[in-house]
Length: 203
Image 1 (cartoon, rainbow, N blue to C red):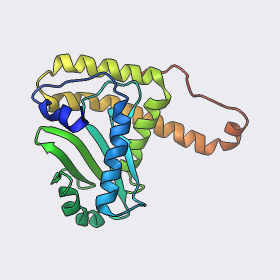
Image 2: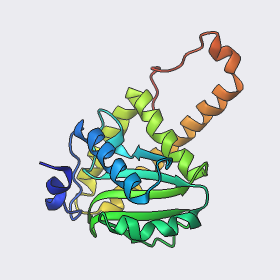
Image 3: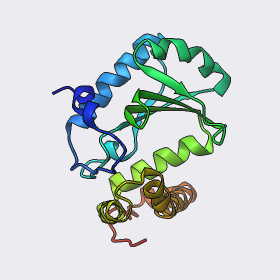
């Protein structure tokens, strides 16, 4: 069953975490192609982010997609083309650094498209969090356990569930940024064989 049809019955009245589905990767690639085609921009940078982008991690069955522009004002011209493939622009004044588009009904979205300025802190943080969990299975497992426990605490409160995850996410981003800084400053040592990937860590 196509991803968007499968999710027609998914409503955020309850918080539902599904087991990792490898089809999420191929569904992202298909959606990326649709976005790039309708925006007529072959050079547009589009990334798969969020839990569905991390192999082995359970997730709410919603594809999170991130695209970048040099200036956010450029993305205003995306509103109508994206509307033609089902994306609705949703104004979030509390997040001025991001343009947000939802595919699917309110509180029942199947795809979320986030547009950031290329190289911005928000852009970097999204990639840092994703890549860190991809690289460190122990941290990924901790996140999985946290999400499952929070589902029990907030079974019908998506806002409460999301807020409760925030401290963990921020901690991971801090770890990732610290590692990136260290790697940048220790390139010669890294070339000499220094390798930290796979070490056990706890947040």
